Length: 206
Image (tube, rainbow, N blue to C red; front, side, top):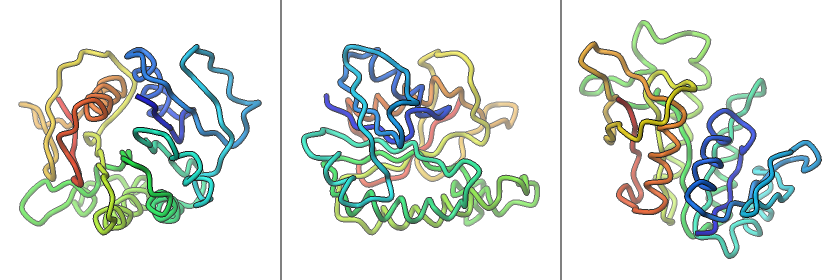
């Protein structure tokens, strides 16, 4: 498949790129400055672009089977996620898969993770922005999927063994909600190859 990937330099985006290349897909890494992107692979192409540029997203999406956004605001304004969401939708990709946050997942009926008393304050603004971006995709007339990780996601092993769900936070027998970045990337590429969550939010955890 031909995949366009926003955010290929980030912790999650890099693993998505590596997993896609490992499976033999053709990946176009969309970056702000091509000179700073040093990854090399025969199936990897680099294109300069800005996720906030709707015309640019339209151009990048042309001829691609799927557009994956692993965009994150970094140290910038978390609310830029909303502008990015509007731009991605306006770009009219054939398929769109968006890496979101865990905050919008329910931990009990009607209670989302971001609204729980113990949610880390340092992550709250970003989590709220991810949650506010989700309705933008839900209201879009296109083939989208919004992928929320477990509560804790960090580099680790690629086991290929995990669980998926929709609106509820996945926890293990000890009550922990975790996923490695590598297995999160596996889940996303599984969805690329065999779509199950069309126009849905889904989540991945152990």
